[in-house]
Image (cartoon, rainbow, N blue to C red; front, side, top):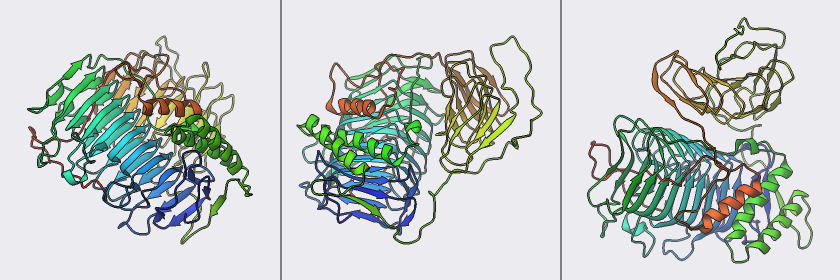
Length: 599
């Protein structure tokens, strides 16, 4: 890292590296020539394990123009931290992209970004975090938290935070589930010393849109001392302890001037198990608009990481890095020229040449202990028991109903337990990548897939038979052209259908079955917590603009989506929804502690 200079692409080859990485304060890229830190052999092929949990696994103070992509990051005080250098607000972080990483086991935050301009946290999986947040923005101006999956957080605060004087923040298309605190919070409890100078709000101009929030311990969305907040087109599941979707309250009550929430719009959200839309504490009801929310509101969309884009060659990784670098370049005044320069730098880096005026490319060697492959935390699942020459005894029964079972498989295709790409035959296949995060494509027959992770991707064509996913994780969204989903997790799971006529079959646990636009058949094998049907609806494009304006941050996110080739999320109208934690606590919940802002 000490030798990095603008346009350097640092390739980290497959293996496990035990160290705490500190990016030097004086090693910055430029807007047209950022520095890239990349897992060279594919997503999560390179694992960085913190040597000590007293420091972040990756730490950077006061640096600019960085992209960190596709690592497995384990342990540390924080997984990744970008913060100002010093404490006088004179050396901010500028222009960073954190994308495609799997972050787990951090003591405090998964991703911590504070005192920063133009910060993008995209397509990460963050899980099993200790005492604080999955993604924590403190004093960030123009930030995007999008397409992340965050789960198994054991704190009492929130999975996603934007607070401490944060301004112009988009929180979109994230999948938050199985957390003990809030799902998403606009604003928070930040002590005065750590709020950006001059800020009279915890957060301002925040849009929370298109997120799916399931199984949270407190509120799906909270607003703490924030103003100009839009909460729209989210899928929000409440609980019996807090039977509302959005909690609106004050910021840090011991602040010299208490910050109240105002100008909050909550509309068009799909609500499950909510008795009321909001709970609003006294003094926070100014210009709060609530309209068009409820269980009948149509919701469909694409949340979480762009999983299909994770299986890439080294050159494709560089191409994706160049696309993200274009986002950085867009933050400068010379956006178009900077984008071209970044793309040229990517081409040079991909050829791994070093000459006068070209990109300097570094391959990082093993530091301490090394072992092949990434650290995996996906639990083992039972093998359905099929082999290539064995035909299970299950049979298909003719029926006049719109629901059909898959034919028994006649061949079996299995992966290695890593991130596999598997392709079926024209017959009836059983396809299972085992414990890795896999991409599985079927053929013309009736195919059955084993999914050990909510991020496993199943690709089926129209007319490609009757297909079934056997789920061994806690949640799964059926992809296009796949008919059936069966829970195999005895601890309970959430099953989401699609626009087809699906068979959603629960297991032995307390499952949630959510139908899509077709005629869903819900089979209650175990104890059901919820059976909920939605009518599918799609719209031609995804709109980030709010109130007639197209903020620069939202334009850049759209540009990034187009440049990476990911299909636009669909099925949203103009709505809002937010979450955070309480101050005056009507249910006697644990109150949050003030955040020091910078660690």
